Length: 89
Length: 151
View 1 (cartoon, each protein chain N blue to C red):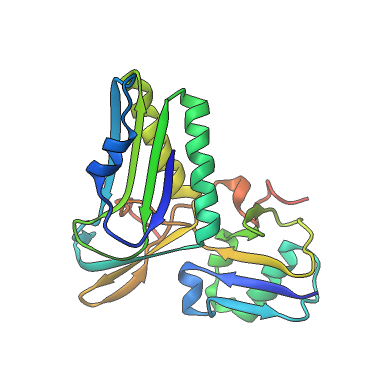
View 2: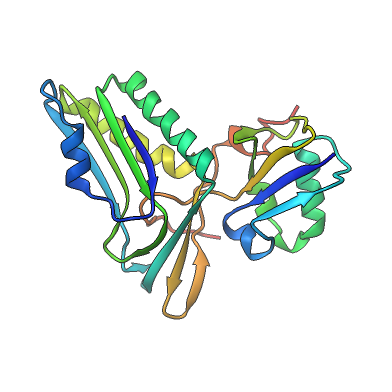
């Protein structure tokens, strides 16, 4: 199936902003995450913290993808005022 | 209800002025500004990016929810994207209602929720390099990998 995949935040250091996946072999959101995790395993624990939006709606891992869906991979968000919280890593 | 993403300076007084109505007794304003350091590291500027259409949709939903949940009369929520200098406003949230209590509560809830789930990211540029700000963890139900969201 063909998908349009969007990357945001820190993922932009590794991927381009947008990628057309012509022949995605999987079926679900979790499959897509697994696919990219295998492409960039060096991103480590980041993969477990992502949210995914399918056609601009947050989607759980078991959501089924369809031809020409827009799938956005979203790292934890940091909008708003700069954050004072200590990040223990 | 004013909900926007903008690339230019946010004019706090114009937005809050437009929000006020005769029946209001209070407007609570949260003005989020760019700090000059993160944990002592000197900040030069920030660069905000967003999944724009989704972020706008999410902000609109939050504004609607704030009215429904807290019973406030109206909400303005404007987030700026692109490069922001120290001291500039990145987010303005203003909540108007007849009585102050709910405006404080709604305003606090709006900024706290926005920071967890509206898809906007911040890259911080320091004198000695740049980093993507570590975001707040998503609520478990939004994480794609979460046990809550699996079949």
